[in-house]
Amino acid sequence: MGDITPNGEEFLFEDGEIICQTDIDSRITYVNRKFCEVSGYKLDEVMGLEYKNILHPNMPSEIYFKLLKDLNSTLSANEVIKNITKDGLYYWSNMEIIATKNDNGEVVGFISVSKPASKKDIEKNSELFEKMLKTEKD
Image 1 (tube, one colour):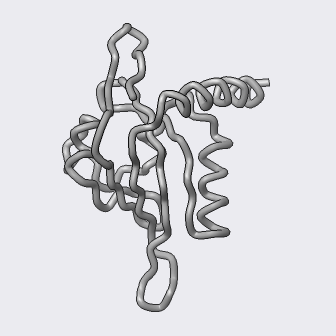
Image 2: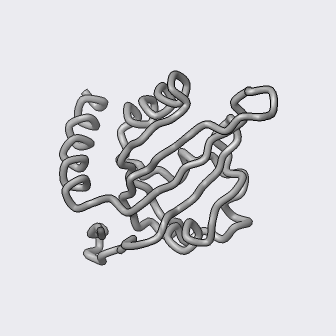
């Protein structure tokens, strides 16, 4: 589904899956071609970047911390996320994240697979995010 940008342009992320892998500190170590296509970043620009740097500024910090809490307790998480592209547009995705482990069973990073969020999920989460951001500012 698409989203309307502040200048009225619609940015569409309609098909395919975005794959992103990070180390334990959430620094990007791998992305697929779809990630680059949707985000506008070139591979060399995004490698080593902290994932939180591509979250939209209007993403409530509570959602980010919930993701981290879920990953720490269950080693997986699923959230609807609003990301920002290199040129300032944004897109919504349904992100599934799982922890990756080394041969000793220690968590060494995370891999996420993101699909386009549905219009219903975008509407629901837009309202929720607005309420959460208002509470964060109060």
